[in-house]
Length: 253
Image 1 (cartoon, rainbow, N blue to C red):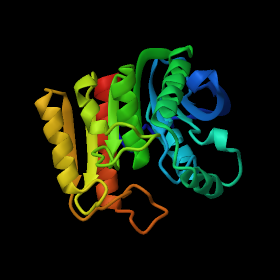
Image 2: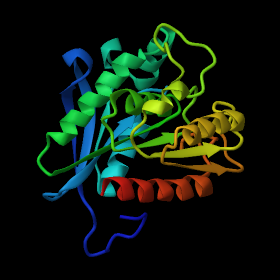
Image 3: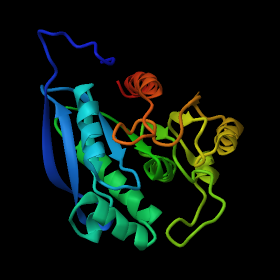
Image 4: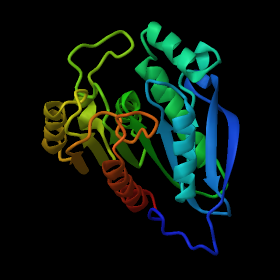
């Protein structure tokens, strides 16, 4: 359903849950799930939260996509670090060097398996993330080859100059293994990724003949969907959100 196109005598309703799912290595991790009311079938969407953590913004994003027809789930990638205010847990995780790519992939595939196991699934699942979550979504899609579409919202360090023990491979080098369509949303004022890094990413997708579309926005920098920050850009955010819905509905049904 496109933005703001519901019928006023049939307002879409959703069901939300705070649940546990099997993540990487079978670990039980928390997740927030939202799905449209009714029997379906519904396409699935895994949301990969950003560096500030499993926060209110991402819980709201999960509900927003459910209101637009997706069975959506956002796993808590920081769950193993303990519990408390999102800012505090995110600071703790950053102090420990972040979360390992392999662990994130396992958690995202666990979320995908949960969605596919639900009554009313149409069998297709996409993945979307912003900032570090955009990077993680790309790594998960390339590594697992399990997703039917990916949306990269200004994923930082997809083009990665330095590797670490937890991030041993630059994601852009994984492009050859990607087997699903990609939508990329970027701000031309961003520094991570910079326009030059977005160019490198696009060149790699072209090199390997991948199905992709990139949209770049003037007057927007990093995180321009984030309405609670000064970086929010409403015009660019709403245009790109509409493009995201169109892409996901086209690819997932």
